[in-house]
Image 1: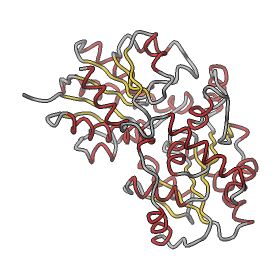
Image 2 (image 1 turned 120 degrees about the horizontal axis):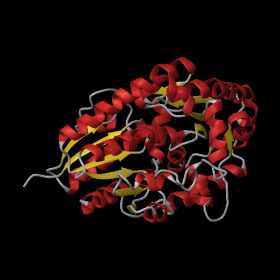
Image 3 (image 1 turned 30 degrees about the vertical axis):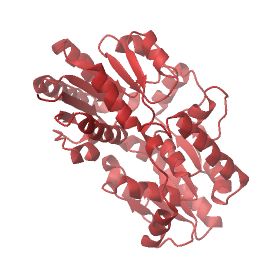
Image 4 (image 1 turned 45 degrees about the vertical axis):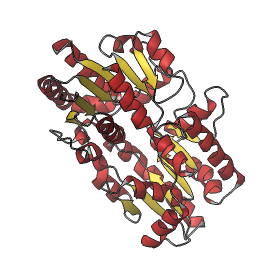
Length: 385
């Protein structure tokens, strides 16, 4: 008996990592599974053969999308045609709702019998609550990363399982791994700052100068301070040009090395997003920041229903309002503000220990200690089929 045919769509590195873990788990549950679709390095390593580089899809924000609209529409048509031609039992779209949900909508119109699953519930609790009702027209089932999301999806008419956030299943690096990372890269006992400006070209363009200036200010008072910068495949050259003196973790570096780098860091300056949870899993205190184009910011400020975009703050403070991770957005994202927030974390002030404790609470709420989220997601998909 042949296994299920699964077509996956992941349009950026964070979705690619989710997709790779899901592919491994699906293969463990259903060894005869057949995969098709698009993804990045992680999914390719699991056997996927994507027709083009997902860097073309790594765009976010109204002002950023408009100049590349025709190219994105062409890729949308190509992915939809490939999905229909694959004749899948299930289409799994992963995050990147601006692109992937459009694929799902078109596939549903062309092949109504294909089951559709969306991995990572869109943040309808944060903005545009009407998206859930729109999704329900072409999405059958949702895999939610946050425990409070299923009721929003179910109220709109979809089934939904909380599977946990995949970061929660990553064990923190051992002391030996951290020591080995510092030794292998010649860091020794010098203080280390991890800098993550983003995985999209626009993000790196907007953040790199601010983050580099912040590092320079910190280093002026701490001459031994060193920077390590993880590099996404979508922006490798940009990051290398923006941080010429830093230790760069190239795209091919494995998850273990990335986590060891994070755990070895005394603090982190990161673009707000999934990486905030990666820092939490590594036990690294952080400051989160984000700048977007003025038009995107203008629209978002009129739609947002919450006062935080940080996943650690959301997990810990959904019911309490706690905000342990400092956040700086738009005009508040300046080298002066970031330096002031990072200095006590780098120097080991009490705020450092308090943030690490809050991060551990966030991970518990997101599934740490339970069955691995990727395995739960795989079982949810198969049960839905």
